[in-house]
Image (tube, rainbow, N blue to C red; front, side, top):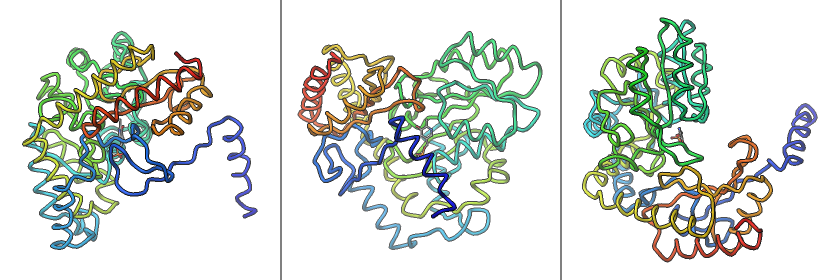
Length: 390
Ligand SMILES: *Cc1c(COP(=O)(O)O)cnc(C)c1O
């Protein structure tokens, strides 16, 4: 269409910069070995950490809830879309997280953007790690608060930003596990700076929910900082295997979000099947912590294997293991070569990561067998050598 011709130039420019990527298409289930673009590959790209996305118990719970309640919730929560299933899940999740209350959102994205934007305003300051997720950045902009960014996980940088804020209301916000590097935020030190400067703390546990802490309770539990972090955001879309987000914290925070958070007020609540499947996932986390142990064993096996072969896995301390290559085109060649040989791991370049820090990002799951991971390691070595990366 002529009126949209300006988009042709934009698309052309993305192609020229090598930034135009088409998503691969999955046929069948999301699992450790999956069919992408018609090819069977070891799947190192999914956030399905515990293999719950196609777990029979979750599938059964979703089917049962669908038969009983139907497929849709029918409205935004504050009008007519709050179901007893949603409430039951929130209460169980609050107990699990050891907080007073929880509130479900449609996604981790809306949980972050809806929360940050509604609890802070023009007079306030948001102090944000430079590698925080896009949904935190969007929420910060929507709040109209002043945004101060500190260098990644840099406590001196954080202190310097805090010193500039005077007596204003301030919120320090950080990812728990960083999605491109797989490192864990230095939360104890962040909390102690927050106390010193009377700041609030919010953590985005998208990649820590179901992964870190006892039974997968998250970063706060990992560091035993219960009661010290004001706002915990998490996702049901990754390790929990379904879709959705949540905020966990004091009752008055949740009371306020129900009144004011725009995704709660203006966007329809999750289908009943989502709440039912997430409830089943929570039961599995409590009953079968060995699933999380298996995730960590696989992580250690794969990361140490890559390192032994001379790959640079950066600061990874979690199942997110980047293979940092540096050059953008080399990273894409590595990802393409791996896929040809039956291993699916995403090539990631600027603007998702800094220029010169391009990488292939791998995510290990509890569902991978030793054989899957050995095959992936051998393939990394073979393709890595042929490209001169190791
Ligand atoms: C994936 C992700 C989100 C968004 O979660 P969704 O449930 O997929 O919307 C938020 N924050 C971080 C750090 C993430 O990695």
